[in-house]
Every structure is written in structure tokens, then in C-alpha cells.
Image 1: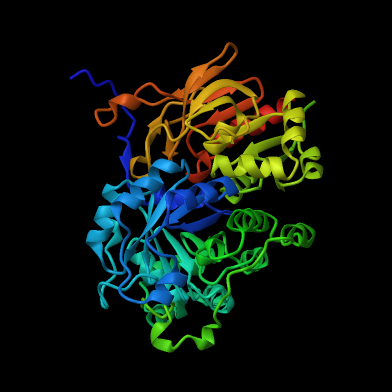
Image 2: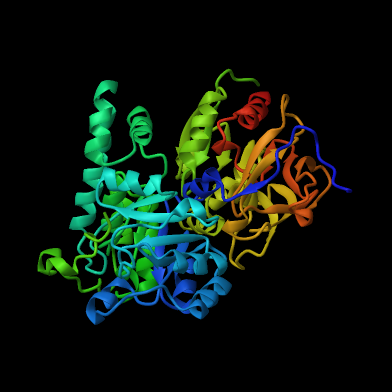
Length: 304
Length: 206
């Protein structure tokens, strides 16, 4: 064998937790945009998106058209992958490990095991440790986030009510996760056993989070974000970055709005910048109040 | 002029800013976020973090940081870029966007996403000139590599030969040119602050 190797060096390894979680670290402070065509992906990249999420229909259309929502056509994903140079994410149905295998084979950079699609398994989520590609999953509370991390999720997004343009569920869930993190880190060690039971999460993970005061993976926000001010508010509430779904391509001027949301995410704490970028964006997506969505049609409540 | 505890900025437009700030503090510097020209004016050196280089390039331009940053680099301000930061500091980036801006502080040509997509991202050990002790554990995430170096660019690290990735063997993944340091990987993610110490030392020397 002609291989030369320095005696102390470890072999390069792909698909490790550090490489998967590290990828999400690189997206921080950025905006990930839902796109359904290569043209939209190009607009998103031009606007400064850190990644795009390839899907067949944006949540607003899934909501309007109904039916079973599934993984996108591989041709569509290929088209998007070959159009942009930024990372491409794609959605698989909750529990649909074969859709996830297909997405990994297509070379997507992150798989979103998403409640926006129709769940394929109402008991089990995907065993995400079994993949080289990293996963992002949604959560409405800390226990749900920790269960997903325990299954191998390398990134968490707080859930909002996708496809509504109503940010209220996103704020509720982000505040809930942050409040539960604060509570957990204030508990004495002997109360962590019961805390783990109540959170329905593994004790080791609960103990780690109690010690650090934060999730061991990056926490983004998603669902219902439609304006630069929405994105900035979510960042101020503790999101490390933003997913925008229907909010961009269901608005009057997607390119301008996309760019404005990128700027607002970076300068989320600067009202002067926010005022400047919020001007002249044209029509926002029409929007639906979450309260007007009948409970069986609420996406955030899918997943457990 | 040497300073005991230099103030080092981390370009905070997007990316893993906090990780760099933590490592800089541990390596003996005071770290501040830099998003505005006034903040840039206050720092003794600057870290350009990992993240999405196209996004950072765009924001540098929009928020009028590009020219002030080029001026400070031309004046000899020390800088350290990891991954996306390396791409920004380079003279030229291949496989980037046509409108991507280069800071031209390093006479190198880099190739973006050179190792492949995220499923090809990896971690492993390498020897790093100027860093004492055991090999450095390096995390590569959709990483670039250096394809060409000009005169005056010192190569600090290359990908070792392994059976798994013969195409990547010997690729240049860390360089230095005067006060400017760049790595294709992310020393900020491993908790080993030796590369940050090297950079803090460069800032202190000036």
C-alpha cells in the first residue's frame, strides 16, 4: 500500500454529530427561504439567503389545496441544487425514512423532517442517527426539542403555524422553549430526574441542557414569518436564525421582501435599519389568523 | 507596539460569530461584534467567521463595510478567516457567484465547496505549522480549499493522505500572508484554541 499516514492522525470521518451540528452553526444569523422552482431559488440566493428549502408547494398552497403533501419530485430538487451554490435543504414527511434516504442520495445538505407535510408515521419519527445528512426538526416546547435531538436532529426550529403569515404561534413556541430552558437551568441537580420525566426526554440530555442553559444544537424559528419586523422580533426573542416559507413568494415583490428580511435578521436590534428596510415592500402575503384555522388543520400540532 | 489584551472584532453579519468570540476571549483577547464602520475602526484585528460567503459578501456591500474593511486590510490590520472567511479574504474564489466580492487580502485562489456537499463534510487530524503539540483536529463543513498561492503566502496545513479521500490529499487548507491568517476548516468548533492563540499573537506583535 502506498498510503502515507502520520502516526497520530485519525481518519477523516463524515456524518459525525459535530459535522452535522456545525453545519447549522454556519447558518446562524441567516434566513432560509422556501422555494418551489429553480427561479425562486435564484431570487433567494440573490437576496442573500444562507440556504433554500426545496419543496413542492409552499405551506400556504398546501393549506389551500389540501390533500397529502409529500417530498418534492427529485427532478425539481436536482434543478434547484444545480442552480444555486448555497446549501439546499428539502422536506421529508415525519417518520418517512425512505423519503429521507432519497433526499440524502440526491445530495441535499439538510433534511427537514417536517410537520408541514402529511406525517407518514404517527408514532415514530425518523432515526436520524442512521444518516450522513443532517436533520432539522420542529418543536413547540423543550421536551419535543430534546426528543428530536435524542433521535439525532442536528438543528431545531421552533414551530409556528406555517402558511398563515400569522406570527403568533412562532412567538408562543419560541417563548415557551426559552422559558423552559431558563427554568431547567435554575433547578438543583436532584430535581432534574423528575424534570426529565416531565419533559419526556432522556435524563442525560436534560442534565446537559440544565448545565449549559441552551440546547446542544442551533435553534431557528419558523412558521408565520411574513415581514422584516417579524423576523427581527423572533431574533430578539432568542432565535438564532429564521426560516421563511410562504411569506416571501406569496407576497407582492418577493425579491425586495427577501432582501429586506435578510437585512432585518442581521440588524434585528437596530430600529433605524428596520424602519429603512420595511419601506416600499409592496403587498405582504394575505394571511390567515391562526384562530380561524380549524384545529385538525393546524400543522404545528403535528409531531409529538 | 504590543498590547496585553488586544480588542479583536468578529464580523457579525452572519455565521458562527459567538464561537469565535468565545475562543478569542479564551486566547487572551477582548472580542467585539463588528457590523458597522464605527465598530471596525475600534478593533486591533478582525476575525471573519464561518457562514455563507455569498450572504456575507452581499451584506458587506449593503451596509457599506466593504470599502472601510479593504482600507484597514490594506493598512495591515491582522485578519483571520475560517471557511467563508477564507473565501472572502482571498484574491479570487472559484465556483462562487459572479457578483461575490473579494477582500483581496490574501494572494490565493480558493475553490468554494471544494470537498463536495454537506454529506462530504468531515473531521480529522492534521499537522499545522506554527501550532505546537499534538495534531490539530479540524472540522471541514462544505469547505473550500486553496488552489493557488502567490509569492509570500506561507502554507500552514494540508490534507494528509488517507485511503478514503485520495482526491483531497495534499490540498492546502491553511495559509498565512503577513498578518493575515486563513483556514478552510473551523478551529472555533473544537474547543482547541491554539489557532486563535496564534492569531492573537499576530495581533499582539503589531
